[in-house]
Length: 394
Ligand code: ADP
Image (cartoon, rainbow, N blue to C red; front, side, top):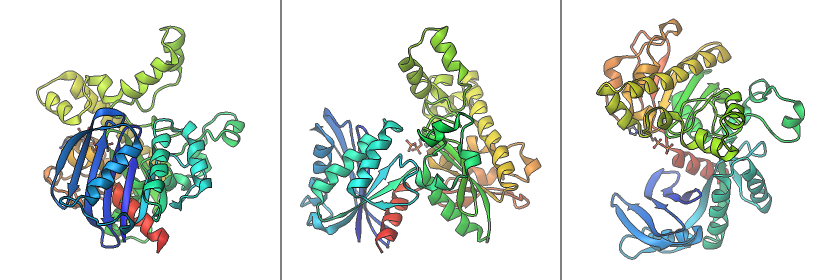
């Protein structure tokens, strides 16, 4: 069964075509700068790679261009659009309505539209991708996979904010959590690797967006992103946890507008705010040369992660494994080293030599005497989407 996985953002569409259940990647690609005359298309069929610039006005143009490439006589991978039986769509916010992957109906689309109020940067692009895909692949089944779904098991004591109840009951103001497909994918890998009947795991997803999840017996019981993807860890350009009174001070005393505060905390803070750089490779290189701001930013961001590790050990009354994943978690031995230092009290002992090994496979980087396993597990959100779509329909 050929499944097309679509991650449609506000100005980009990422796609992968996968054969399931063999899990064979047929091709992948990315359309960027939708809405511009110089939109960029990256297309990678069967190990080759093509990059071109076209004017792409809309998501519909973008998806049509993708289909053109998939059907191309030279570099194409299918003969007919009907070969694509399923289209799996990543949707960021499913509120409390979806705890599982679901077939897309008119009602589902209505809900995705409704939750755009909670995820204005993501849900509208996700919905646009669905609408266009229904037109282009009329015979395919359309399936939605929600970033929030894995966290629907979080109990009320962890998901309710201490604000008047009616804001939770009437307006859905609560922790939803994000990066669910990634946390779920690495959880399944970790549980299989550990081979334990019952398990307590902390999954740490460190990319441009960062989040941590406490996973007990395969279920999310707490997570660091909250009502929106702003809470918790220090991210590429987002502050993570901050006293909300800072916002009032910025507005009332420093005369920021609300929009300026939002831009400040979302786009100008985090590692970017602390160092002027967002790419961790640049920050590490500067820290290596002795740049004090960069050294401090690494200390601040990893200290935050350690605090959450402590909190989640308390939440689960124990810990069997820590999992590092995504761009930073999979590649940065510096970050892993700082996070796992001075945690011996919890039985966490990193093996410095194993931590330096570069690999794209699941690997264990703890010392043999470590009570807690430290694992690096490459995440694969697209494969998780394909697996869930396949399981739903078979
Ligand atoms: P996204 O959230 O956009 O999917 P990724 O998971 O691709 O992000 O992670 C992007 C981050 O990974 C960037 O900050 C980048 O600097 C970091 N990164 C990628 N490779 C390395 C590396 N070898 N060493 C350190 N950081 C890395």
